[in-house]
Image (cartoon, rainbow, N blue to C red; front, top):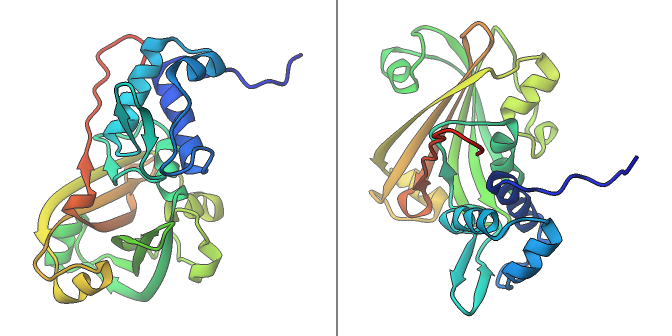
Length: 246
């Protein structure tokens, strides 16, 4: 029996394979990708499927395509793209794998009326709160992040124990809290003075706040994440499956 991995064939599979190679540094930033002909031969892909995958990489801000000049790798990490839905665990993991967190303040908070409405959860619930800054590999701040964990379900360890693991993944591994659904809100706001310092920007600069809620099998929220991105670093991407192969 052959031990070789099956070659990617659909646009989605090709996109994921090429995106992983870029994130891992297989194709360096500023370097040209192999030619279309070479990639098709190496990956056993059709030109149609490869072009669809390349279009998605370009939409992510990972590559720049120029006719006659090839495709240049612009960055290892997508421009903070969030899809309207999450189709796989790989989608959730990919973003975190190419960045790192610097966790800071920790506390226990209770969601009063205003905070509960903003987070989209019940009032008077107790949560473990932790906040920090997410950085790109080159040390550039990407987002301000806060997480809220239901204290009746779990508590977080010290930051060094988490490492690069997403909080939801650590909770699943250590506490058996498996995410069965994720909901997401996106709203426009502006940077406060302290936030501007942490993101190396100016106060009142436009930003987007993204709130994600993680639901267990019973439909209960056990984890909430709150991220703030500079609007210039954020692209909202919707991909609709209309039938047939993805």
